[in-house]
Image (cartoon, rainbow over all chains, first blue to last red; front, side, top):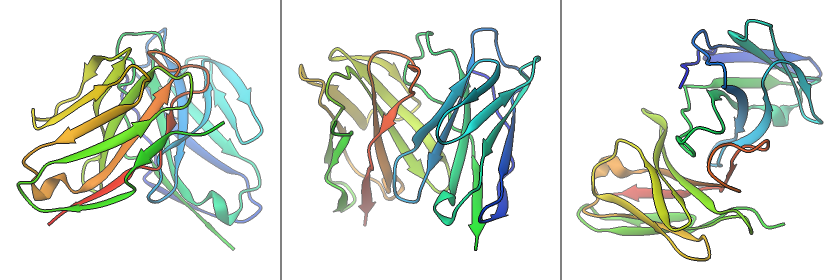
Length: 113
Length: 115
């Protein structure tokens, strides 16, 4: 499973767009990129998953350049409730590692009023 | 649609005791994974069950064990508790092995404190 590197923490203000970048230089051909969000004392929550280019859902966008060695999670117009830890994971959904998700240290996002 | 349910929510145990935690996955989900989360080590994979069989196991001592029932509900047991076992234990479920397009759904966890 490819190792990921993210900033340890980020600060933002309400209403701003936040971009969190994740580096995964050793990503394999069959690997997907998945982002999770975690609030204190709760389990991580799936945000978005992608393989290449751009993926958008009602919560966020995920930008993946052609070389796939990094990815950027974009949160539009954040609010105080977006204060959480964000994890970037890389792995092949179809391999026999199954549920063995490898979580890095994550990025602690703090949104201020 | 009900989410992943973990019970109990909080637990306090004494060193040397054993504990059993329960996880009910989303209806229809057949894969259940367990994770331990501590401030020092972060989120670490314990094991995964699919169709009542353990499919993957993390690097934890044999004191940590689990099982899955025919209805996909899962339990994990920790014997001879140590202070270092104090953690948030999380359960995650998915339709099958591997990440689906919607990833894994986690429960809110069981906060275990060993004193």
